Length: 88
Image 1: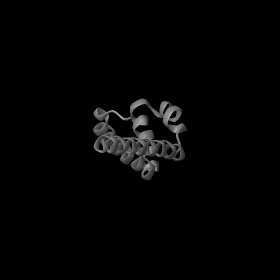
Image 2: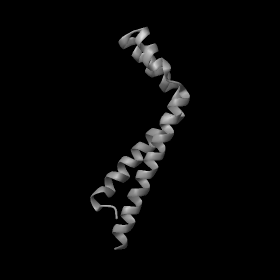
Image 3: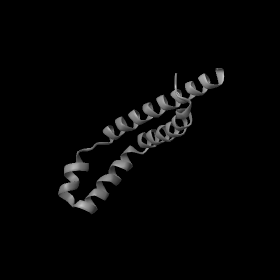
Image 4: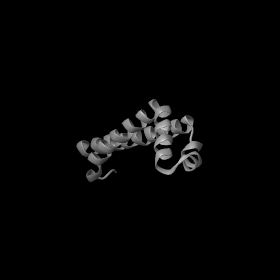
């Protein structure tokens, strides 16, 4: 049984996480380039190559897919909780 106090947060945050994951997957190459460039400006070339330079657009896609799956699970849990609440 899902708590009634967690239905609304699950639905709202689930939709936000789901949309964020989809945006990460769609714009992973530009996001990766932006992170690298901003770290290069803040910390210098060597530090940016060490941290953000190791990331690849593929791994950004993996993170986006994981966020999408998590958001989907949150939305499903919110819908199940709402169904349980209104069915009883």
